[in-house]
Image (tube, rainbow, N blue to C red; front, side):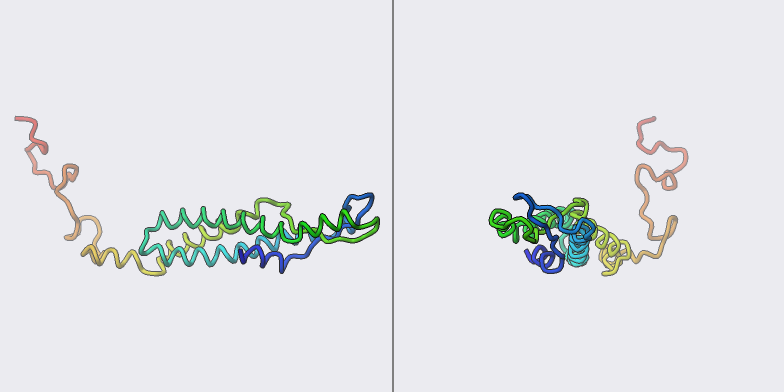
Length: 184
């Protein structure tokens, strides 16, 4: 998955020092652990932006709700796959370096997420972008629907284009007569 590979290419890896066969942070004040989470959020939010726009453009043909739900679920699954792929890259080399390296050897750990909430950056961004585009009606779908239905959309309540005469339309009910004709 390209997003996981992009995360691996951009995010810094944390350096660990081997001591007694265990990996200890080489610099406890290093911000690389936080930076890895931040880069994941940035990369997946950008993917969410693209997915939200693509879903909005396709929703005109396929329906809004189904497209939004599918995009959110798919983006969530893609974010998990990107996270796991980014973590797996370099994992075997890291374990090999731990086994083979002596005390004092510096090794770079594979990427890992410590703030698991960033996995939601992709689906949330996609849903927000989709919702904003839908609210702004960028593609003008609502006006095309009204024109296709024969409603120019200019009239309000009580206007000539109002549909009435139904059972619950009190203005269309003749006076002195029962609407459902149950009374004699």
